[in-house]
Length: 529
Image (cartoon, rainbow, N blue to C red; front, side, top):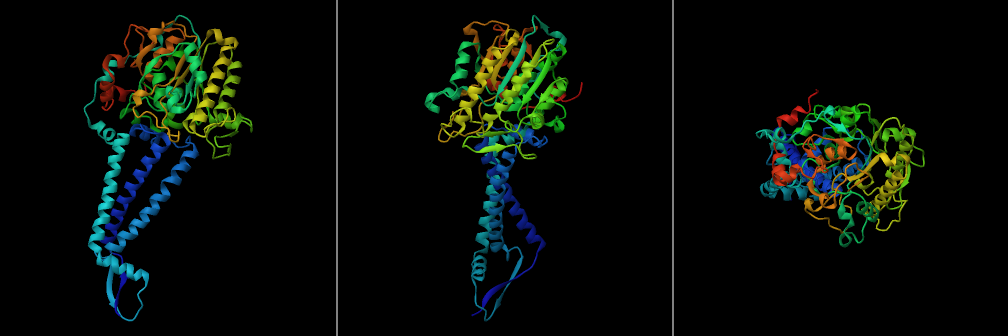
């Protein structure tokens, strides 16, 4: 019985169509899987601005845990499914696109592959149309999903909009010589990664996960009413607010800092105020400080800052400090070329050694950043593994931060030192199993406590509406500085109880809308003075 066999040949036009449609399918699938991976790893709220910022900087500071996870979870399924898709598309479209020529042949038994070719040829038009539709839908759906999850389209279109006068209206340029100090307290600022008050919700978490930090907050000064507004709700953006009194503005905050060599050099920073008023500055973290341009922020605005990051720990930490137990009982050991961080316990221990050896001839600013609560790969050998998820990391972080604060308060320098513990943004990683965090970010407030600030506030003055950029002038005044009207950048010192913050004046909605526009003034911050 005659049957159809194929004579395969390459048609440039047909092959081109096949490759284009295959690429559409691969891109759509890759984008969808990447977005799902970001949500799974970091939670909702990761904006296109944050993604673009990280992609624009060197990757030498990225934790290989994330790189390996991405490569393992995104590339293999994308390539495998695309290969299957292209085979199906080729099968149905090979005669339509002129890739294969079919003819009758006598006397040869028809095998399984020949039967498949015959089936595909019979349904060539229907199959081809359906598969092309699937590729187009996947590609278009990926953009719709990315827009909904990450505001990608809004970010892409923003540069084409008319510039806003927002920063021209609200930015307060404060030079170091404009700041007068009534006294010069030392400042210890502990930036607590992703620490928020939601963790003390017993109904949601099963128990209060931060009882010690909560007790500290009840004992000392805290501010209530934090809002994670646009441009402040991820680590380096929050640090931008703390030190420059600015959000990391999109689209303008992404384009100018080429390879992280400088960081908004023409904007004013409280770091330069401290440096030019005789302070020693230190920045300590257990990861590579080049990641996301953090080191550049300090070196640009306070070149004398001593930066103690993973590079330093790699050379100075002991083998025991570079090997810690993680949640789940595994051990993570430092391996040259692979590890990119040390655990927070090691960083806290190093901070204590640095502080006790500090010369006393000048005041100091010591900024330390924690990282265990960025992922659930935290050190848990100092607390029981009760939940075997992120909650164990938070319990451990609560104990370490509290113990460090109590230790600092017992040191000889404590009487003239202001200690601030502050969460940088609401947590982005959904690692709580069946626990669903509040969907609205406005319901989630970060932690803060000010121990031994120079100004004194009444309890009813602690309830404000503020963002990370309000912390820049607040930190200055906490150690004894006096600002002309309590303002720095677009921030307002929370110690100025009679002066409204930006959000209290304009409202959150107005601010969020203005952040979607460009700004000539903000672009000028990228230029060298």
